[in-house]
Amino acid sequence: MTTYRNIHDVERNENSIVTVGTFDGVHRGHQSIIARMKKLAEEVGGRTVVVTFDPHPQIVLNKSGREPIKLLSSISERIRLLSSMGVDACVIIPFTFEFAQTPAETFITEYIFNKIGVSHFLIGYDHSFGKDRAGNDSVLQNLSSTLDFTVEVVPPLMFDDARKISSTQIRAALKGGDLLDANTMLGYEYAVEGIVVEGDGRGRKLGYPTANIESTEPHKLLPKSGVYLVSAMIDGVLKYGMANIGTRPTFTDDLHPRLEVHFFDVNSYLYDRRLIVNFHNYIRPEMKFEGIDMFWSQLRDDRDVCEELIAKRYQEPRNDIEVSL
Image 1 (cartoon, rainbow, N blue to C red):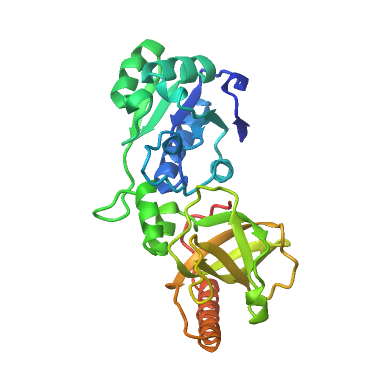
Image 2 (cartoon, rainbow, N blue to C red; image 1 turned 90 degrees about the vertical axis):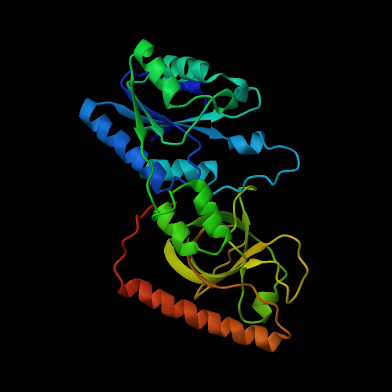
């Protein structure tokens, strides 16, 4: 996949199958759009182009007093996911307050048609764009006759009878500890990318050394506080471990949750390494213990649960969509 961070660098191709969106998480709903784009591209001999934005528009347009949005994927994660799905080109438009004032018709004409080229435009069922989010499928249909491209609205993908798959639903599932639901809607296992930073060394003293992961994306959503079965590639080998997300109430009064991972059978020096931590199972909520012995005993129980889950993962066939971050 070719990635463009400046739209002026894009070589115009009038036979482009284009979609536009933030694509936070690149979940199964997004994947259905991409699958349709690829099918069209194969039929007409065109290229697939995803136009996205960085930073996320809600970060730029966030109103004072509102909690900033937490992201399912950083821009680098989005790029890797889109590339792994076979998209031909990704155009990243810097999102600023000034850009947000661009009328929908101007955006389609000057950015999409003039700079990229378009023969087919695909849009999600609920997507809107342009100033005041005035752009929708009706605006596209009006422009399509003048600019000679087709418009296709991709219907929602349902998770169950009540829920359409969306970034909002996935965020809610992660915040609520419904990791299985979140991963099912994503089509892959949720991951947090970060750098291993130095901690206080308490885990090592207890016989459970931990890697303290500091996310490389300041707006990244951490799942609900608690203990999880996780994995990461370390020195080219998949290693499992148990992670704790929380404020460590047994020992401290941290205001902000941390991500700490105890990897099984890993003796490598991990400081300053960049790791991608994949979340497989939610084990239990974070707890405050009366003493070290109770805490240590719980860690042993947690490890036993994790090892049972690991064994089960290798016994059962996997039906989820494999997407590597």
